[in-house]
Image 1 (tube, rainbow, N blue to C red):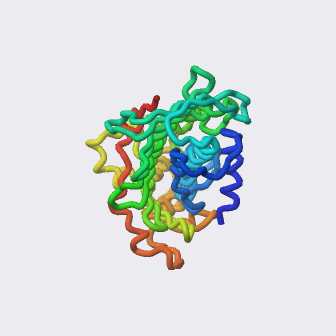
Image 2: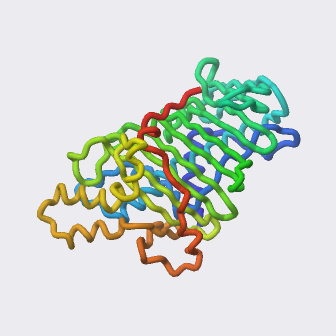
Length: 356
C-alpha cells in the first residue's frame, strides 16, 4: 500500500540528512518519534503540484482534491524528516546533559550538539533542551522535550541540517508532538514558513494539525499561496487552502472538505468560510469570470466534483464526492463526521513567523 510513498520519502530523507541509523540504546533520553504517518489516501508526494495553476486547462474539483494530498504531504513528511534525524542522534547514546560533535555524511560538515536540562520555552519548563549547529554559527535544530508524558517541540532548518538539501531547503519547520491530549492518543502540530518561491503560484506557509485516535487521524490546516488563482488571472490576494479531513490509516481511506478563501481573510469573516468560500463556489466564480460565454452545464462539468465531502482510497486518491459515498464499508458515519475540525484564520497563518 505504502511502497511507492515510502520509497520517495526515503530518497527525500537521504537528501536532507544522509547518515546512518541505529536502534535506540538503553538509557537514551532523546525522543524517537514525533510523527503520525498518514496513509497514501490523503498524503502523497507529488512535489510538482504544490501550486494551483494548470497551464492551458480549466482546473476541476477532482484536480483540486488531488492537489490537497500533496499539500498535506509537506506537513506529514516534515515529521518523517524529524524522526530520521532523531534516529541519527540516537546512535550517540545521549543519557543526559552533554556536548559533542559529529559529521553529517551527506554534506561532510560538522554538526555541534549541546544538551542541557530544565529549559524554559513557550511558557513551559522542559526536562531537556538540545541545540544543534552547522559548524559553530548557523542553527540547525532546537529541541525541547519532556519524558513523561512524552511531549516535544522541534524547530529546524533543512539547509542547516544538510547544505545539499533540496526539499524545503530554505524553510523553517516547527513541530509540536504531544501524548498527553485528553482526546487523542497523540497529536502533532506542524508549521512551515519560508517555503519555495520558484513559481508565481508558490506555497509560502503551511500549518497542519494531526490527531491520532486508534487507526483514525483527524486533520485540519491551512496552506498559504500569496499569488495563486484557480482559473482567473485577474484574481488578487492569493488563496489560502483551508481544509479538514479524516484518514483511516489502516484501511488507507480518507474524507476531506476544502474552502479557498483569500490569504487575508480575518476572524470576522470566518463564519463565511464553508459557505461563501467553499471550493465549488470559488471554482465556479473564477471559471465564469474568464469563460463568460460558457453555459451552466459546461461549468458544472468542472464544478460538480468540487461540492461537499471528497472520498479517497489508497494511492489513487480521489474517487468521488458529495452524495456518492464509496461502497467500501470503511466509510462509516463516524469517518464522514468532520465536526470540530476547523482550520485557522488565514491571516494568522499568513503572518506566521518561525525562528530559534
